[in-house]
Length: 637
Image 1 (cartoon, helix red, strand yellow):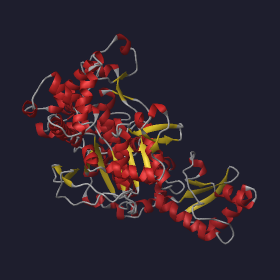
Image 2 (image 1 turned 180 degrees about the horizontal axis):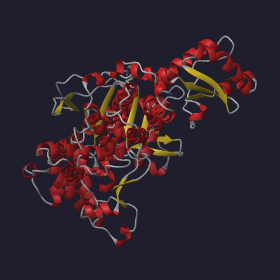
Image 3 (image 1 turned 45 degrees about the vertical axis):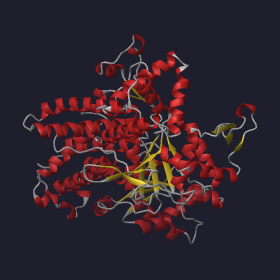
Image 4 (image 1 turned 180 degrees about the vertical axis):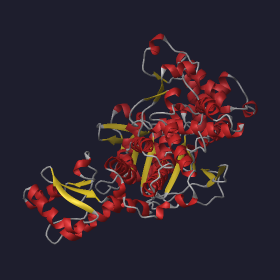
């Protein structure tokens, strides 16, 4: 539809610019909420009326008169509501337009985009909240790539932070393990899950222990052993686990950027020089911040410490340096080396200050998306302000986007099913906050395993004739679809309460429902003979449909045509639930249509061929949407 409306807008401007002061971009189309007003609508008469100081209705009448002859037979032009210019599309022309453009994709763009997502502290196994970040980030990246943007997916690894220091201190000083013993740990990510919880309980009970933990943190930052060696080994092994878990649900990265490399290569000193020269970074005059170098955050009129009085960098200092590298604010680059490979051979690169043989041209980014939860909004807003101060963006552009999201909770039912502790008070709540300190937490790998096991039960019921390996594969695909859809179908700024039953339902607003619809579509189309599957080349006028079917048929065509616009709108609003909702409503519309109008058993050739054409169009668009959401399509369900 985007290409069609662009064509309509270009034609209108060509026809009208000799009589009306029309600028490029003035003509914008929307789909009316009520179809009796047409299929497309524009408020152009209101805009021109304001510009020409005339009544919208008079402008509208002139526009209808001028355009009606020009747009037939493609569309009928009418006026409604005192100045809304409406277009009712010719059904036959519109169907052929969709068929002819079925393989078209948005044009390639030359604006490189960097999406940073996941970015888990490499100190323990990933948890359910990290899955929401990764699913949102991956769907964002897939959407941008589909829209034609050159894309890099990066994962920031905070391997020198306080959370890594917590577990290093726990291993060396609480459990009293040597580096050799630590290296023999079989599943570091899982073991450190428990160590981290134990350390936090200890620190809460004995605040004096924080001094010892802080000394460990300082030793890691200064690369002193054994602390640094333990931190390096732990972070690398845990990172491998994170990559494996995310790969199991179809999430991949191009580059892992390690914080230690930012520190070792002294990127922040370069960034600080730029900030100081521009007057953005300065020494505070606040007695409580004596000796600290700060940035003033204008939105809240306060100073944020960037460099402490002892010369050490805060978290935002490292993040600023990383962001400057992303957008090409300085020429220095990282050395890169191979970290690992995916099963199909795709290489994951990592930064490494010690040197690397890989030559890659990462960045500079025209636009950066950071997928980070809402608790980091304050720091992310400061970074956005700094970039704007250094180089104001053209009106309407945002070169730095904090793609924020809320936390993931669990329903009380889910907490019970996971055999986690549940207080009487929590039992009465609609959702229970995940808390490692309270013992209410679930590893990402365990959640995926549980989903797969529950999916397998359903697969066994429905497909007892399939082999064990085939049922295993289908169960994994259903589990991945259920998880990924659940994580993006809600508004990103809303807390979501995960529930196994809700996520895995085969009916309703779920991933398995979408998968089932496409599996069903494929099954229907497989029953057609070869000639019927090539029906897209047959030109059939939808006028042969009765009025009821014509309305249902064309409603689905309009939904199909609106797909790319829905994706772009979801990105503009930073709310990927719009993509999920579009896929769900399309599935509902198709299933209602198929229940009402037979395909295989329809004796009338024209009706059967029209319905097959619609099924083929739905399959192509729905398959595209599921791919963007990272939802696999099983052979059977």
